[in-house]
Image 1 (cartoon, rainbow, N blue to C red):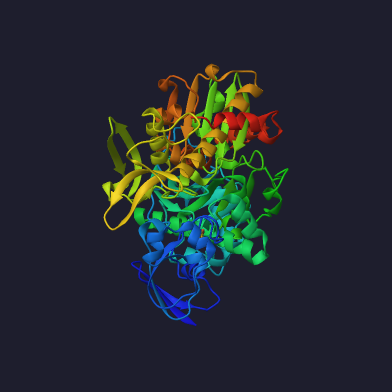
Image 2 (cartoon, rainbow, N blue to C red):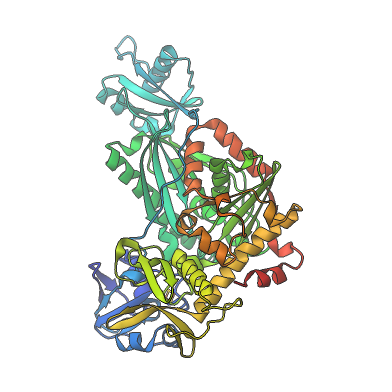
Length: 595
Ligand code: FES
């Protein structure tokens, strides 16, 4: 057993000789980016060996790391095994946190019709003449003080009810859901709910007052499953190995949600036991992983979900630590690759209600698109890949400090903007879009995406455009290969839009409004996305960027039963098109890759 010391994060701990540094990092909660799940092909788990002996370089490392990086002792953590105690430096771009996580979205604007009601009651103090059992005492006090007639007490609540009633001197606020009392606390308690959007990369959580709909606090976190692979297929494979692996991936999400609930409560001075309801949305694979449902069948055609129906269970059944009898409600899915987060986005953006022909799009590793034309809703999902999250891009990274997020090139004058105005360390998705658009605009890329001659373009084995020089380090560049990766991603999205529009007998020019939702979509320059042909060439005023609409949809469903019914109606109404079955889709996809 050796000791591995990860700096500057300051985590150290034991590592077996047959454990890679990536595995050791996972055990020590050092969140290394591991887009490929540890196969040595993404090049993102880069660390620098400061001291100690390790195994020899692998071919994968020689392919992924530059000569200078190899010389400076950089290695891929997934490929390295210790031969002694080792001290490792983790550069910021290899860490999944801190990252920009997005919680802003549309306002919640509905009249609350919550599933939970509350009433302040005073129970009869038991005497020798009247020793009514505590649960019956509570039920009768509620029935007397309100029009509610619960007939049962949640079993988890019963386990602590007797001391709790005595502590509170027989005066309590009771939270009731349907026929059941699910929590008690001091009179006047502010009962709250938790709405969560679990994205493939990021999690956004909101603490909401159940009876007013007011959002009290919001917090974002990186999805901890990232260390098991950036894309869903890698995670599906990881979870399908053994029941223990599936439990591990589920546990990571449950733990993250418990952490978010406790942080949000700490921020607002509330107790987690006042959270009486949770609504969680995510794509179908995340939904299944979170609930511990089987995912193997989602990994290959015909991509069958275990369920698309709304799920309602006790939150504690999967390990969520909220009020004793709190419920977890999951919105319905539409298909294997169109999930509850898409339904929540459609709910929040009111896409189903517009008379105008509306395209709603949530851009990510998987991009979901919905077209509403005269009330006919049709959705599809395209595998746009993780390029926007920085995968397979030489200097790609997620939206973290030091990421180049915008770039302008005018008369050979180059301007870059980095997140947090920090020294550039890489390029995030919105930056990549801008760079390609600006290179095309300035004639440095031809229509096919080929790099032309220019003093800033170095033509080595692979042509590279120099974005930022860095003293003592390789410059941050965008390579010809990176441009190709972006073309694949944007081609998939545009071909998906075109196929959807064609399927309902329209042309792109018939789209009267485009709603762009999601964290990535919020930060992109729509002009750049149109310029490179990722989005249709429509007047810019037809586009709107609405932030995390899936999170807003989850908040709506949390506080309103009629919004839950509406979400179910949207999911039932939403027709799904499988792109693989669209005639000539591959040819259309290839055409959509042109800039
Ligand atoms: S190269 Fe190590 S995790 Fe991808």
